[in-house]
Length: 411
Image (cartoon, rainbow, N blue to C red; front, side):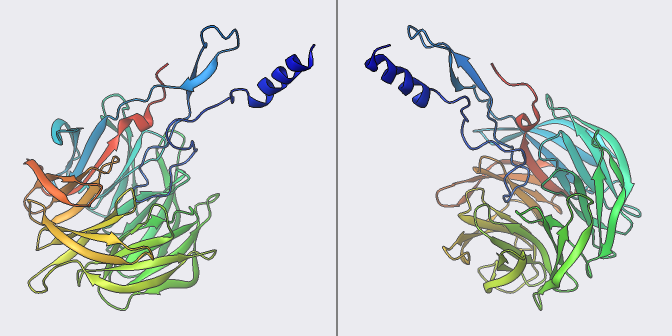
């Protein structure tokens, strides 16, 4: 072979087409630790096509991406779960089916990150958590089982980042629990139970996946734990909590890119930025608490906090003022108050931002409605769209892309 031909062959070997090419963002086996742990994982499927005339093996090209199929799930105090199709770009909620659950108070839900399973609190009676399978084609639910949470008022449920455990927080007893997820999505008996504090209101995994935080409204602190991802056991950190002194911490949300979180205080309608200290994962105050309202006075309580998927904005809901407050995130993780927008309903207990970051849906408990607000990702501004959707005692709403659970890919 001539020197020229040798150089050509060597160049082809060194600079040849890679064996795999990812589309969009990087592939991973678990969802990115972001505001919304339900964000769909990226895919890395590829298809190959021959390059005409080159006489070589086919090279990889990205597989066609599936357009999102957004479905909304609504829960509350009416003994049912509502399933709706959410149409973009119009922002319409189209009713599909109501799942009757006689006597159940379905006040919070958690979607599994990679498998078509849904976990729902039932605050009625002695309290329980329910497991459902999700049909990836039409969003319909089939109940799998229901497990006691060993305490009254299960107000929050989450799935850890490994997808192996479901965790619950009980407002009535302050108890928190972890349950192993069985191979078919059902829940086994509680693996760990402990008292986190008075009025435990949320249980949430840190982006690291090995720390868990529990805002305790009555104790005015956020309890801190490590999660053993092999056993599901929870062990208190040292110190065991971050003392917030006053205000009644209710919910917190993590920043998608930086080691910051935001704790909403229910009783005094304020929000406190905190940092996650490495490597201990302990929380530390970051700046001072800010009001979620432009003007003090009257009866108001904070309810929900969410961080925009891009990390530029933080939103909270005001029950009484019936608004969503907007904050901008500063370079150091602190917040600056910007504005409030009416939700178009009464007592917005919960809201969520859809995966594309361009819409916000609010569940208004006392008016029994779900309202849709368009979100400008550049400015954070919210604008009400369309007419409210009726849903009695609406306490929770979340939109997911059902394609996250599709096992087949376009070829």
